[in-house]
Each structure stands twice: as C-alpha cells, then as structure tokens.
Length: 236
Image (cartoon, rainbow, N blue to C red; front, side, top):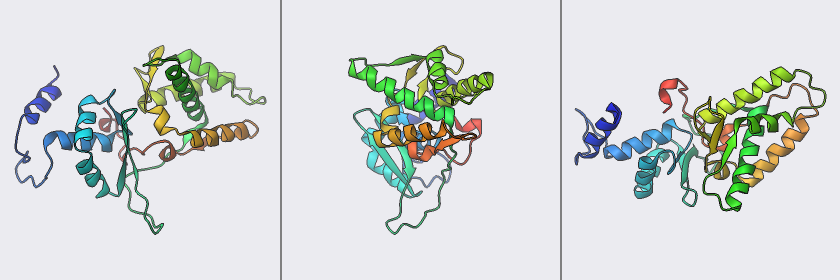
C-alpha cells in the first residue's frame, strides 16, 4: 500500500468535513477528492477511478454544484460509467471565465481517435467486455491516411507513434506508453459521438488533399478540456 493510499484511508474515516485549520469547506474528504480528480483529469470512469466514480454516483448533485460554481458542467454516462467536465454555455451566448484551455489535436491523433472508436464499437458488438488493440495496428492505420504526395515516411511514422503516446496520456488507451498492446477505454465512445466522428472523417479526407494540414479537431469538442496547468504534477 502506498503512502498516498494510507493517507486517503485515514481521511476517509473522518466524520468531520473540517480537514485543516481554518477549513470552511462543506464537502467530505471523498467528495473533495472526486472533485479534484474531475478538475485534473479529462474524464473519470469506474474502470480508471473506481473510488471517485462511486462517490460521484452517490453525490452527483453536490459535485455538479461545485463545478457549476466554476462555470463548468458535468456530463455523466451511467451506461458506460464515464463522467467528464465541460465548459458551461451561457443562455445569452456570452462567454464565461474558464479554467479550461483548447489545444487542437494533431492530424495523427485525430486518426487514432477515429480508429479507437471504431474498434471499440466493433468489439462490444461481438460481446467483448474489454477491447484491446496493438500499437502497430494503430500505426499502420494512421499510415493508411497518408496523402499520396507525402514522401517523409519516417517522419510520418514518428508522428503516428507520438500520437499513440498522447492518447495514452489522455487516458483513452489504458496502459504504459511503451507497451505493445493497450486496452481501449470505454470513455472513447461517449466522448467521441457519431456526429463528431463524421466531421472528423470529412476533415481527414479533405486534409489528405491539402498540404500542411496539421490540426483538425479541438479537444473541447471531444471531451472536457484539461486544466490550465499542464505541469506533469497535475497528472495522475
């Protein structure tokens, strides 16, 4: 058991919501932990964050309220057991202050996301409860989208492999970046809806005929953005 886990267990046993001197917060430790995880991570799921997911299910309203105070909305897919945050939209169309940031996915990352969603749906349709994919399968799929005029094969392959690493860091491929095989996260499907998939495929087809097309999709359209701080300390 890690030191962090031991600390978590100790705090979870406390009945008081006051956790430190001068604490004016109204949430219990487990609720605060789930809220912080939602803010730090692009999404949480029963698969990747079982404790936080259970707290969210039991206290969805209070966690939604805290996110709303930050101009954020909470999206929950109970069927696939996935939850994520997204920027709240004003009824008047005006922009709220935001903690989130938009960084466009690269062309290769977009191709990977499309492929993962397709493979996940195919696997689940045949009765698989967990769907796996090989790194080389992903790299070969990305290569199939290389424009006919592309000549930098080595560079294209490097970008494809870097895209795999990025998707692993995003949590949509479960495993270590250096692994040869990954599990596809159940979060791919709710976070990449069919209408957005069609847009991405159309963009990919157009990009294949246009040079220097590096960015195709905003991550905020795929799932709630990450926090402004991108330091590695923010990642779990």
